[in-house]
Each structure stands twice: as C-alpha cells, then as structure tokens.
Amino acid sequence: MVVEHEILEPGPLLDAKGRLREPGWARWPLLGFDPARVGGRLFRQLRLKQWDYYGIWAGDFYASATIAHVGYVGMAFVYVLDPATSRNPERTVLRPLGSGMLMPRDSERGSLAFAGGGLEVELGLAPGLRHVRARDPRFDGGAGLEIDAELACPSEHESVVMATPFPRGGFFYNRKVNVMPASGFVRWGARRVELAPGAALGQLDWGRGVWPYRSHWIWASANGFAADGRRLGLNLGFVRDERAAAENAVIVDDRVHKLGWVDAELDPRDYRKPWRLRDRERRLDVTLSPSFERISRTNALVLRTEVHQCFGRWSGRVILDDGEELAIAGLPGFAEEHRARW
Image (cartoon, rainbow, N blue to C red):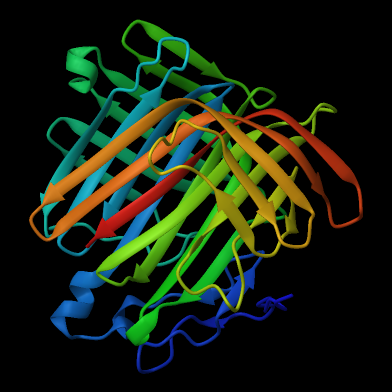
C-alpha cells in the first residue's frame, strides 16, 4: 500500500529552478503557480499546457466549454451531448501560438475570455460562484449555442488538487471540482435546457503543467445524486508518475473521500464496452455502461491529440471514509482515454 502525501501548508508550486517542490495531493489549491518559474527557454514555454475545462450536467444532457493554451496554439471549444438523440455537435476555434491569451495562474482568482471565429467564451469568478458563458451563432450548422450558467462553489467545498511530477523537470498542477450546484440555462437551436441546483451540476478541470511531448492519461468522472438526494461525484484516473499521490476520490456533497490507486479495465478496440474501475484497497468497484462515444482528434503539425470519451451511467459501490458503504446506481458520467503528441 502506497502512503500518499497530503499537502497541508501553502507555498510555491515550483522551486527557483522550475521543478516541482512538493509532489502530492490536497483538498484545496494551496500551492501557488508562477509561470515565470517555468524558465525562459523557448521549448519549455512551448511545452507549458494550460486549460480551464467546464462541464455542466442536467441528467444525461451535457454541455462543455473550455479555454486552453497549449504553447503551440491557443483554443476555445464548446460541445453538447444529448443521449436521447445521440447528437454531439461541437466547435473549436484555434489561435496560432495563443496570441493575446493570458491564462490565470490561480484557480481561485482571475477571469478568462476568448473571442474569435464567432465563438465567445467567458469563464468568470465571484465569491462562492463560477460563471460559464458561451455564445456561438455558427454552432451546429447555424443552429447556435448559448450557455449561461452559475456554479455554486463555496469556500468549504473540497476538491482534488494534484501536484504530479513528470520526467526531466516536468510537472502537472491540476484541480478537479465536482458536484457544483448549477443554475441558468443552455440553449441549443430551438431547445432550451433549464439548470436548477437540485437537478443540475457542474464540474471543473483546471490544469497547468509542463508535459512530456508524448502523453497518455485515463480520466473518469461522474456528477449526479445518490438515492437519498446527496450530491455524488467520482474523479478517477491516472497520468504517468503518481507515486506521491493518486487523483482518485469520491465526492459527497462538499466532502472529498480520498481513494488510492485505481486500476482500469477497458477494451481499446471497442471503447463502447463497459469500463470497470477498482481500487486496490477494495473500497471502490464501479462500472460505466457507455451509451455514446465521443471521438475528438486534433492534427495541427506538432500538435496531435486523440480522445475517446464515453458517456453513460456508473453503477457499483464505494466505501466512504467513515465506513459507510454507498451504492452507486445510474450515476451520469464519462470515462476517457487521451493520447497526445504536444
């Protein structure tokens, strides 16, 4: 059994040489990221990957908005998934070298906006709230998309924060926030999906890091409600070196219940087959039954990515920190395998 290191005190993420100072995990974003410490060498700046990815769940309906700067190129993308119709339109707008894009260094401070090619995305912060707004009249062949959502994220809401080392001085600083009560709406063409806190939830994947050129990860997430009405989420997966800590956790209301290493069983020849994830301490055993596979590929010279993101329902069980065994039944979510050369 690996003893994970929990980060408990604030401090800088990187040392003076740009190396990760304290690998491990935390419930809060305690470490301060200073991009100036990444180093002045051009190749390190081009390898710095930064993104703010938001997802909004209303039952099985899913909408997402992201702004990212991956060194070689900046981008914004939006997509929706409606399992009832098996439709998954999306749109990406690229900006060479991310010209003019300034990514906030802190997941708790700073707003972010992108406008180009008709797509506008605004990601804002206010005390206890996160705002996700997107407008794209060209979306889905001119049907149009508008997202206007507020996600409640009070100061007591815990998250999974990872400081993960990579070879040759690389690192990944990542914060995953689940089960944020959502209000507002998503309008897609003639359809308008209302978001109410008792039925809709938001999630955030905030990442900053210097990655290896060839990268691979598995990520699984869920956001829904337990049978007794408690907000229930999953954050599972792994990237390269997680000896100091793994990102696996169950989230119940505002509390993170931390898990250790999780093994994933999937068939890369057919991602629509069930995904089974189990931890090595026998606290978690869950299976995703996919109903839709989203495939996203990017090929922009030195940047190539391929994502297989399977949406469906999770079922199984988990043992919480206090020993309670909680059944998971029909929990909306996804699992993805991502390979990148970037």
